[in-house]
Amino acid sequence: MNQGNLTTVGFDADDTLWHNERFFQDTQAQFAELLADHAEPDHLSRRLLAAEKRNLGQYGYGIKGFTLSMIETAIEVTDQRVPASVIAKLMQAGRDMLTHPIELLPHAAEAVQSVAQTHRIILITKGDLLDQERKLAQSGLGDLFDRVEIVSEKTASGYARIFAHHGDGVDRGLMVGNSMRSDVVPMINAGGWGVHIPHGVEWKIEHAEPPLESPRYRDLNDLSGLARLVGEIG
Image (cartoon, rainbow, N blue to C red; front, side, top):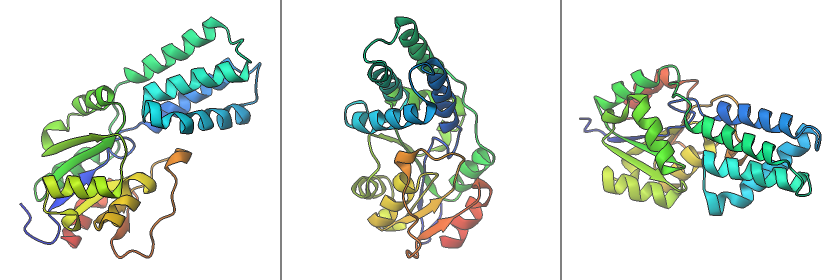
């Protein structure tokens, strides 16, 4: 186990270790097709995003909240005349997402395995508890993590608590993920290291500007360079 400055590394899950957002994009395309007679795709996208933002406090992150937001939006844009058959198809789309096989991203398994040999590692993800547990079990990576934290939101205070409880303090911790807003910025604000690895289409709710002024900010094109970067820092 590493005895240097960096002792604990946190990994985000969705769109960092395995594909996730593309399934939301595919389902949103189905949603637009089902409601094509009632609204244009861009209008539907804006209305759905607004519903998701409104509902985060009640439903949280994940597929179930997304499905309920689609149904709510369908009711709104049709002035409560949406056919029951469309509601049924939206519910089935949500169920399909909840049972979709996990597809690891390139270099994910190798990165986790490599870092686990030298540092304590924690999976820190947000979303629906049952769905996140299912995906972790299917990923084949679960046994590599020293700790798994499934949280409702990722905040600076939350990172400080997690890295103090399961590591040697947030200042000796690093968080790697695809979301600038959730994985990188709050970790750096807490006093730790943040590594951004972009992945495809970004959910607009997760957008934030990179903290370029911070000496503890790093970015990588993919996970293939993570073990080397962790070694350089720690």
